[in-house]
Amino acid sequence: MELSELLQFAVAGLKNGSVYALVALGFTIVFASTGIINFAQGEFYMLGGMLSVYALQALGLPIVLAVIAGVVGTTAAGVVFELGAIRPKRDGDPLALIIITIGGSILIQSLTRHALGPDEMPFPAFTPGPSVLVAGAAIERQTLWMWGLTAAAVVALTVLYRRTAFGRAMRACAIDRDGARLVGVDTRLMVTASFALAAMLGALAGVATTPLTQTAFNVGTRVGVKGFAAAILGGLGNPIGAVIGGVILGLLESMSVAFLSSTYKDAIALVVLLLVLFVRPQGVLGRREKEKV
Image (cartoon, rainbow, N blue to C red; front, top):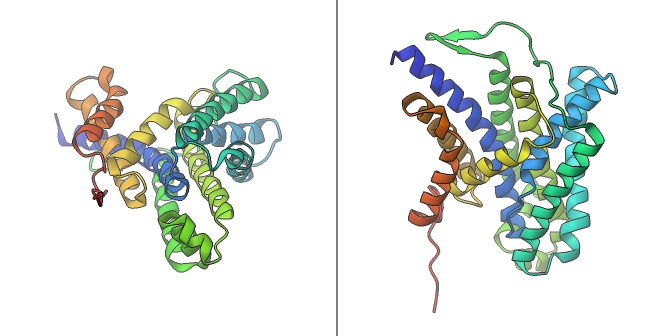
């Protein structure tokens, strides 16, 4: 295999990895603040693309406003999901909450199908034009947008968590909800904010990917599984680990296509998930917890 071909597969891996990273960040943020796994995260990815397409085609908005409408609409859906489905059972059994998120995923998917239709929908590239050639590898302009949005999201989250009082309150809630409540942090608001952020990140991934792959009501499940695998790989609850896990998973998938077969591409995420759970449950950057007797 020539170097240019290998670089092309690496570009494809980094492209997919940036999507997985954003979805994994959504899983991580919700888990850190609530202790539950939100299996509706993949539907936020789907909603971002579907609502943007609807805003562009049905409402006639320009591309920029359609993208903003898709992200804002999905963020609002995340807030409604937390208030309507999670908060009433917040102190219940964690397994029951996980089942609620699975049911929410099915409901969101079904409602989207009935409201926006079952067909695949296209969305134009943010910046039309030919691909950029780097060392013989072609990089689509939309891929550059995906990388840029992922980097911007990571920087924005870093600033939020480390430089703002609201972000520090979210971190306090993630470390110890009871302790944060005792010092005056509104933990319910923090949980709602975590779902809003998770929905926004999923929507960003969905909107950025749609010009390359199109979108439909059922695209969220597959991406949700891969985002969850990336979050587990990096260490569930660790934002940096979520990004690294997404990139690693994307590269592993791409290299499996290069050296094995595209048949195994979608199985890589499940294999990685099982290996991590068996060999290193805390993930690549996670810390092993010690039990005190």
